[in-house]
Amino acid sequence: ETGVTQTPRHLVMGMTNKKSLKCEQHLGHNAMYWYKQSAKKPLELMFVYSLEERVENNSVPSRFSPECPNSSHLFLHLHTLQPEDSALYLCASSHTGRGLTPYEQYFGPGTRLTVT
Amino acid sequence: GESVGLHLPTLSVQEGDNSIINCAYSNSASDYFIWYKQESGKGPQFIIDIRSNMDKRQGQRVTVLLNKTVKHLSLQIAATQPGDSAVYFCAEMEYGNKLVFGAGTILRVKS
Image (cartoon, rainbow over all chains, first blue to last red; front, side, top):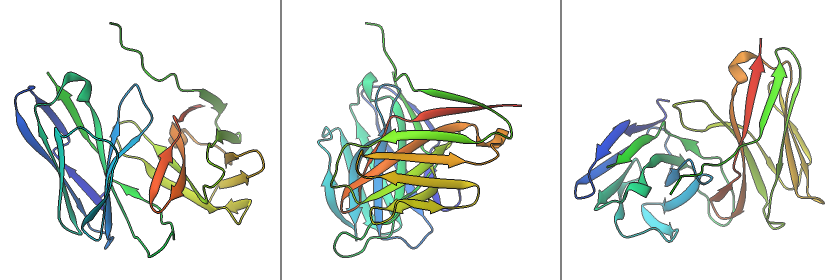
């Protein structure tokens, strides 16, 4: 799991708190992703950054705000979350090519978020 | 109200037997498929991938089969071991780098 790291691994926050999740990849990839994994739904894509530009925002509420300062780091800023936002938040990274060349995504261990 | 979680199918196999995990995908335009393994407390781990111009690909103890006619993907694990116990997800790539994941299958290996 040293390829993609995530901190913190566990987070408990109240609905009025502001917190940030951090992801770092050491694989030389140039695309990074945020996914949400909950008990009720399959793994859901939230955001995609390719070459540090956001290329996908999968209808995610504005209380989730991503930031990608460079190709190795990705943040997810959280504010005024709801209890239903409690889930495992996974970061992934991959190469990205021009056109539609697909590459496998490598995942971090996730941050287990509980909103009280 | 009462929360309802996903009810994942479970495959129980005896150690040493072969396992076959199946997945139906939705988009006939998908051209890339991946199998992931997720152990408790960990993120999904890449196992094997296959592109739509192939119907079979083999790795170490694993084989992926793709049937585009019926939009079906399977993962075969040879000589299943206790360490193979996990949730297995198939994922299809519809365009660009956007992966769509299935709900997953729980594999339990009995010693």
